[in-house]
Length: 418
Ligand code: EPZ
Image 1 (cartoon, rainbow, N blue to C red):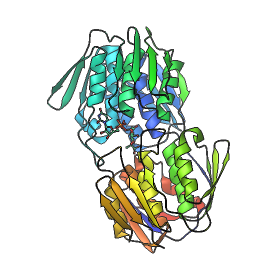
Image 2 (cartoon, rainbow, N blue to C red):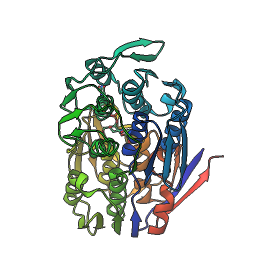
Image 3 (cartoon, rainbow, N blue to C red):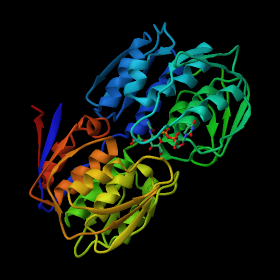
Image 4 (cartoon, rainbow, N blue to C red):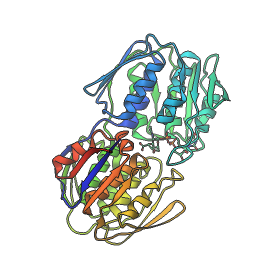
């Protein structure tokens, strides 16, 4: 296992490029199951989760080739319609094979994902939606066993705008007989990317990005080549790095249109943001203003940026409040930030942060993907050395983040954990 050694205090300056979006490419790879033949996806980030998804597809008999940010997925020899516990346990997004397997093969056996560090994360809304389309769902031995004669279009209203649930239902409905109407659907940009991808395969999906999505089922979908959207969370993380170090950083290739809530909150901290097409120039001088954050489904402030903002508020000039409304346990980074001297009080889903001049470097532990990014940001502004262990969490969603930060002036090294 690797760890990071971070020497704090350097101001970041320069340019950094954002990669393709983890939370867009994973559903796209699952959607490749909707067609027979070779699907090609470009601008794919080299992440652990992408390699895990390749393993999952190969465990079903597909063949994959992932090189130079392009992944080839050939489903011609698909013969198994199962996602084993060992793989689902490593990556919850594996449950996104449910919809496409049911739509194309009328059956799927997928391990229930179990809980994760940030919450219980059930998939009841996915399953209820698939039943509305005519699937029979049984739970046996920790596995979902789903079968159907032929999925049939229906209207379904989500109790909560679940991202994965919306994605599973879009993929299931794409090959359904008839029309499916999804109400109270999730509106994340990654869902728009999925709809665009399936439409490029010959699908007929409208309304993605709104809470009302209409899917006209088609007989067949054809393999396509598609370039995945860029990662709004990686982009936000680098903008936060420019602000927290009072630097000047040009973050290139941001999906700016999907970042309105994040950019608005960054500006409220006193950061100067200049948008040039899909590039964001962030410049920070003077004190970081304390701000309040309430995470919400898109287009609200994204929960995946909550931990990074908490690092920023830990060195703001005053008191901030962060309310996490999406996941029930997404404050695992608080205790690690406290080890670095942060002054944070938590009460349920609310955290109150009293900003300090500086944090103190310390040995800390990454607990989940975005908590890891939070600790890197905190380490960049801490006095002394911060050692961040278990950064395999970070590698799930950021491609060699240290190699992107070093050219900006960050003193961060990856070393093997003895
Ligand atoms: C996706 O997870 C993302 N993952 C998450 O990013 C992101 O935090 C989340 O959406 C919210 O934006 C991927 O896209 C691979 P949800 P997902 O279903 O689909 C509850 C990261 O750091 N819920 O919208 O699992 C659930 O418990 C990861 O990149 C149900 O109760 O999120 C949670 O509290 C972390 N029943 C809330 O809804 C269900 O059937 C949001 O979950 C489904 C969800």
